[in-house]
Length: 331
Image 1 (cartoon, rainbow, N blue to C red):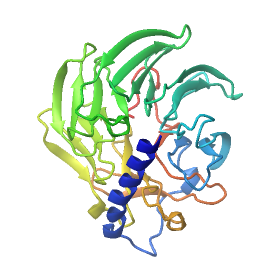
Image 2 (tube, rainbow, N blue to C red):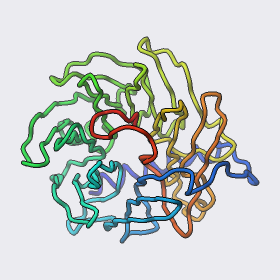
Image 3 (tube, rainbow, N blue to C red):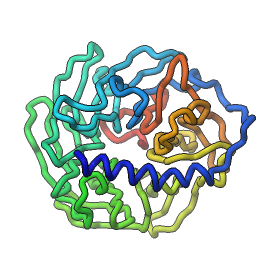
Image 4 (spheres, rainbow, N blue to C red):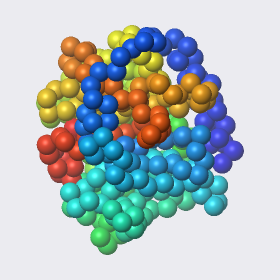
């Protein structure tokens, strides 16, 4: 626990410099319709203001219609923070919360759960087909685990090689592709690597601070650069064909942890601000924004009061066409 907290403090001190350099427009008028722009599922990690209520939300019609909260620490001292969440067609939600992963019903009953052992943690849990999930386990040996959630049977275990010996500094969102490969951002190696189901590296690209990487329908890869503050699309040759950086934003960019590519070609980016431990500076910052290919921002969400959604790590837009269970969503 002390090592994890120490690593987190180092992370905060390292990332705080990014906020000093970020471009800000004090009188920036938020484009779009705020909470009414999209229906969505929303989670964010490390809301240090609320030690008893790390929350995930469902917003419909501009209002929070469902909320589930857990304390920031378990009874045994493990950190809890929502990093990943997907609403399934049947209304259940698959999630990861660092201390474990699970599936919860609309009635808030947990019907499947994985609890991390001491020295391990998870930040990623993705549905892959009906009754199966992929989750990543940071630990002495980093692994991808595939479970049947109906039977709780472990279907596959894939070791992910990394030079990092600190579980918290290994990787975050791991994503399954429609070609049955897995995309992994390796913090220590400063790369995104595509692995097959036997753990063989098939493709890689240099990408410092890659918090997440998703394989788009066009064959390109969309990378979120976390502490580097970039969102980048690269082609199979590793060439950058589109990028949004701090310099492109008229507001403060903290950590770009995740991004979705929409059916209309726009990109929705989660702007996690909690790397700034001056919590009084969070209010008014943009949590999520939608940007076009020509970098025009058409939606910027800042909801820190009634409702206070907290820092943004991951979002699922519920008005996007496609089924989250079969890879139709680019998220």
